[in-house]
Length: 266
Ligand code: ATP
Image (cartoon, rainbow, N blue to C red; front, side, top):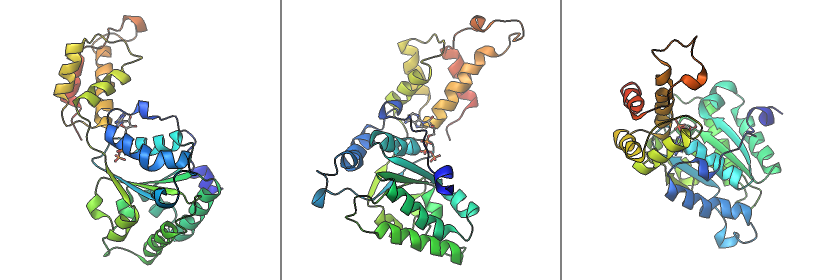
């Protein structure tokens, strides 16, 4: 019950259309993971899919979004854990939790188990490792090694900003590694357009292009923060208590330039 109420994420309204850029990653996960989930009858034997996937790259670039989109496009259940909550919440019970989690996920197959910050869970640093976390790590490996041909075996998706911190044995078991890079200019512009869809804005194509140029190095999450900041700007320096909502002027390139001074790339 705890696993279903705390870890099963039922709010899966993310599709590839909501994710800007990352075309290579989308193509790769479609081929490696989604198609096999949808057509297990075809993707068996030598075509059997990987049971573990590692998404790595800078923070805020859409690793969680990609994992969620895999689940929603493959109509799979999505169990989501952040490694820090796993170690803090279930002190001493981690091993049992991991075993139960895999068992529940298997029952509800097809399932995806997503672990954010997987490097801190399956870390190669041993100095501070206590007995409980060592046992939990071992249990993960046992579960990942579990019946490979079993089609109800959940897919483990790990996300990390620090792949070099990951235990070598874990890296090997997460068979497929996909790099999730910072968005390129086109993806940044697409994301701004997407986020402004329901906002009043007065920004032409050339100005959009300028926003794309000025936001080099910003992640997807940074771009979202930037758009939020730019949208707040028109509400400054006016008497908010007397204006009506329609009187607030549309967002402009100038607002983005102001926001760029406040919101810096992570
Ligand atoms: P972290 O490594 O910090 O956990 P992450 O790579 O998992 O980050 P997400 O949680 O997927 O990043 O992204 C954070 C937020 O940033 C998303 O909810 C979304 O609003 C926005 N975002 C990031 N990348 C993209 C993208 N490519 N397309 C659309 N939105 C994005």
